[in-house]
Image (cartoon, rainbow, N blue to C red):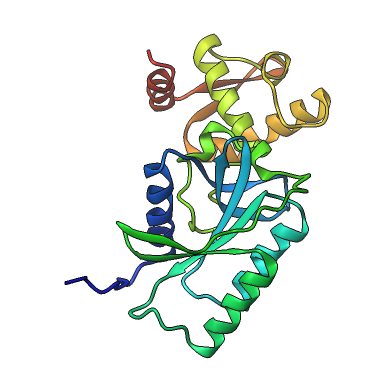
Length: 243
């Protein structure tokens, strides 16, 4: 007797987690919550398929908003394949609106992945190869995109160039101890356009936003501000560096 496919009540992060686990189980390298640049769109999932990107958008409803989101990636030549992933539902029968959505997927070359549960994910419609992916989002993926933020999380939690800069600052302070903004900028790769902008921005951010997070403190030494890691941040940084 064949068990019926059923879909538990999954929040978006859990739904996306099923998709990510399914992909990794097939040996794919998977990245989550990927953004090409500031103020640009964020992809829920980006898969490395032999060096070419496959974008998957995950939502709880198969509707026009989701399809428009996927179509934007297709029109922007942002990946070689684009798919959407949604809950499977209790039956295999599409409602009229879902049937229309399925037809749009076929016409646009957008793949459709159905999720029945953590171990029940399948590709209902394979994504069509889009050969002219000039702006492949896979090129913007870095190791931290793998697990820094689960796909489907609230926006604002994704890995950014700013967060990468602050990670570099943490590692520099862990190695070199208390340092000025100039010393940091002279030795740390940042996302800022120039060294002067980097010094000004870091001086402000480290004194306010980052200090409030509790990992860095600052003190005035003569005419300069010195920045140092807190004891908690030092122990975390030591573990991340394998010390």
